[in-house]
Amino acid sequence: MSIKSLNLLLSFLLINISVYSQTKKQYAKAKVSYSVKIRIDKNQEVYKIMEKYSPGLVAKAETVDSEVDFSLVFNDSISIFYLEKKLFSDNRAVGFVITNSGYFGRIKQQSKNYITEELQEAFGRFLVSRPYQKWELHDETKTIGDYLCFKATTSYTITNPKGKIFKRNFTAWYTPQLPYKFGPIGYGNLPGLIMQLQGERFSYGVEKIEFYKDNEKNKKNKMPKLKRLKLITEEKFEKLAAEDEKRWRNRNK
Image 1 (cartoon, rainbow, N blue to C red):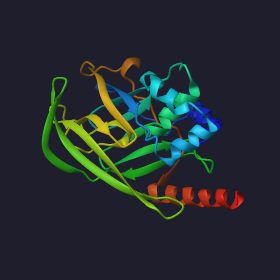
Image 2: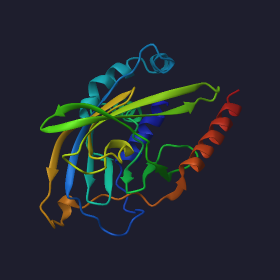
Image 3: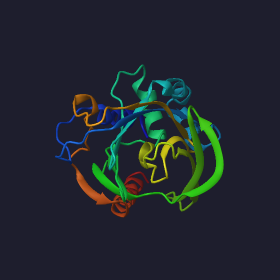
Image 4: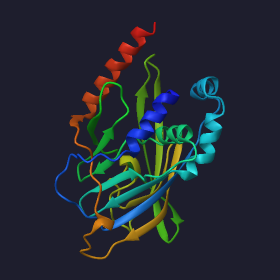
């Protein structure tokens, strides 16, 4: 992703837009603050490309990821995951952090699926309905703060334009002490809140959990909404992305 694209993506993610896809107001019973740390394998081709066109950007990104804060607000039926709006010391580096943390817009989790805002694609901006991950639950436990957490793992495969297949592995640590099936960037549907989520390029961790008073309904716990965009399936989105990739390669032969 180019530097121009990183800046444009950050602008899309932070801008306030008054038109949304939902009309009914929703109020949160709790707010979870997540931090994110990125990990870039300096042996990978993507690192070499970034160093060629933007020397020092990756190193800078690894120092500014502490500036990036995400929040998860939820009630008994849905959650919204979003990037906190703030000023950053280096928008280009933060844009790199955000794209490598798997975040491309607000995410709504509900009982049977989750919906992502896809704001960065040249072929359009959409809401994409996605199925939940299939988890393998493990007996392994660890304590995070005051909570006993259990391990769960999942994976998926992707195929690059050259036909090479890659497997992406993820580990979640969830706590049944907080029986809410939500987590960062759409990962959830486990028997408890995800306290940590670890991927190959990023790691999310809970920093703070704030519960609101019962029946509290005010500006403080009013849940943000997704933008009013066309809702499509994950399969349709991937098809559009593949077609756009093909057009780009034909133009740049």
